Image 1 (cartoon, rainbow, N blue to C red):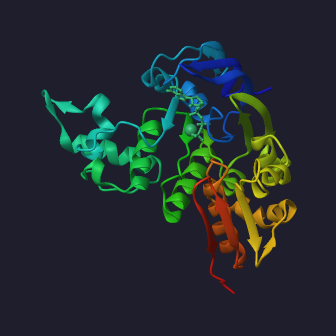
Image 2: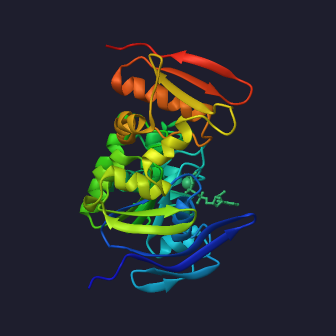
Length: 331
Ligand SMILES: Nc1ncnc2c1ncn2[C@@H]1O[C@H](COP(=O)(O)OP(=O)(O)OP(=O)(O)O)[C@@H](O)[C@H]1O
Ligand SMILES: [Mg+2]
């Protein structure tokens, strides 16, 4: 049997005031694109950061390619072939792309930085990932998608064979996201293991071979993506059937205070109907706000109206505010 690229054995992590992970065990196959999904605060980023050496687990074992590792920094992780791509990563905004890519090992001749060699090396690193970019440009002036490509080039150029992507498309345009997906496919074709943190259904189903679902810091399941429907995945993420989820949110709240009610031309929309209407939304990119009241109500109405082009009056109350939104009839 092939050795897993990443194995978690009973991994736990506590932050002051939050138990982020509890006894998490699962494997990530070498060369796979493996999704980590779950609701807000489920522990996805913490798990990704443990693989990449940013956080250290308090309990359990992490094995990379079959050997137990103890990373105390991202540099340790990269030395073991693990890189991470995330939005808040500290690249130097006021340095060029070439300088950022070669910073850890500047090419020099006679004690002076060889700028020509630096440029060539940076271009080669970007070419490895199929990215074309003027490497003399200042990093801080690049579009977000381009910054991500530079981070990926840095990881791959630094020898990463396992790369964690933490919600990489959250601030990308559709065109930038498509470029990222193509790059992930190329990395996969070269045997790089990609760990893809996301709760966007289309991306998970398009890119990932397997998916691990986390809920409240615990491992729920690890499955081949092909064995699941989107509805299965959502249910495992939220821990209950969707109808129940919307039953809770779409009828009168505690006492006589209406938390969130939806009506279609004066008729209340029932939970199963809402679930049916919600179906295209599950495939959509957006994620509902977590407040369960006003925000969730408006979000659902806007998305349902977009998907169905209907007219929906939503009355949402959050204690002090009550108003009705009539969304335009699109057809
Ligand atoms: N550095 C930290 N200090 C304290 N608590 C933290 C820290 N990082 C994460 N947590 C807490 O650990 C839990 C898991 O957080 P984590 O960021 O891993 O979730 P996530 O699944 O990535 O969520 P999201 O979808 O919002 O990104 C949450 O309760 C979070 O508040
Ligand atoms: Mg996160």
